[in-house]
Amino acid sequence: MTYEFWIPMATAIIAPIISYLGARHTAKIELKKTIETHNAEMKMLREAQEHELKKITEQTKHDIEKLNAEFDKQAEIYERNSATDITNNLAENVVKEMMNGNTEVLSSLVGLQEFVNKLK
Image (cartoon, rainbow, N blue to C red; front, side):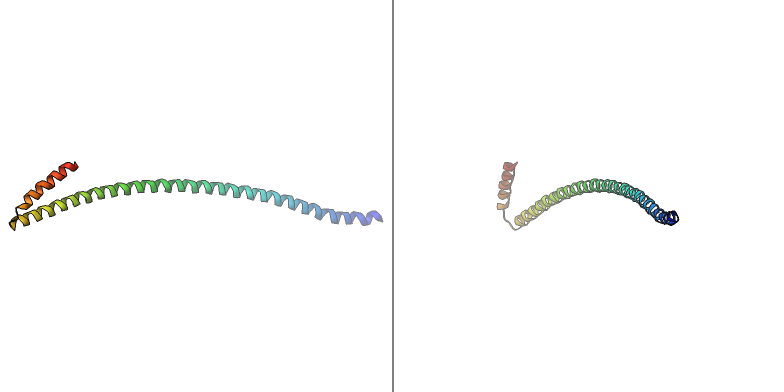
């Protein structure tokens, strides 16, 4: 009678334990696969992100260089325009003074020319 009681009891206990251990093992394997897949995806995303960051950095450097070149051109044009404006204003004032009969303007221009020559 002992065997009749323990055999079904052992079968009833061992089968779920084996099933539980098998499920745990399967879950561990699936978890490892999921982690490996996740890590591979993260690595690909990081690489893509680094590539995009390099691309943006290079584009930004290029844009900054382009802007600097444009600013230099604009500054040069502004400088030329300023020199032209100063020359035009000076010539206009000289002509006005000469029309008013002021002949000292010519001697002032000679002095100005000498000063400019010293600066060069």
